[in-house]
Length: 300
Figure 1 (cartoon, rainbow, N blue to C red):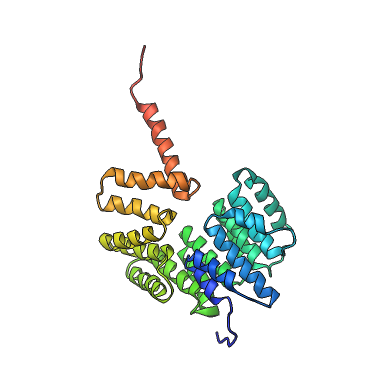
Figure 2: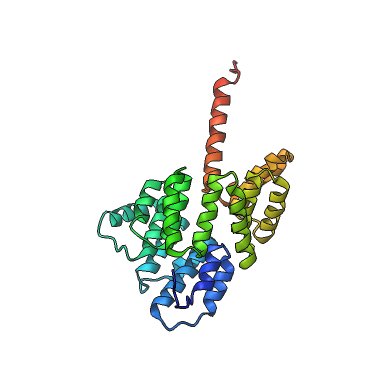
């Protein structure tokens, strides 16, 4: 798609997409923009980067009632993630909004709403929200959701929409990499090259390094994966995806049990709502229940 206009937000948008959140925030602070719409878009990206860093308080403190609907939507997600005791109320309010007339031109609201439903594991609701928009980011999240549901066929159709709209966009490239990872086989190597190319072009972030490591593990190249994951750990020792991949890798490499257990403890401590942790704790409880049921009965 030919477009002669310069995207003034290209650098911070790219940094956000590849998970280089601090760089995104730093560059956003330096920007001097006159266009009010661009200022809003910049702030949306910047505050989403703070959310990605789990710095919810910054968003909640700074986005007040004078800000427009796009930033209010970002604040809604920050509020949801920061306050577990308010989640039911926020969800109820969101359900009410979605059942009314929604401004589908506000793709930020649709993204934030879908992110909340995604977090609730309500994938159907998230997809219904996203399908109202043709923004590249909404379609990219749809691809992720459909791959999570093992609907590779439907994900392929959404990916085609992205490629038709902007094949060279970093979001389209990342969506293609996720898709290739899901398809597997010879596509693992294609996915690896996409992650590698983006890392070479921009920065080797934990998100891109984890993508490469997942490709390596899928192909049985566990030593290569280990090197990539150690690099990711050096950049962010508390990244949940890196910790999950380290747990999986330690099993494949036959590491001592305490190595994997250390990563599990760190995940439980810092990311107790992560799907891996929730599933792990559920399995632990089930195991304990079975042990109690089938263990020897103690008689006085």
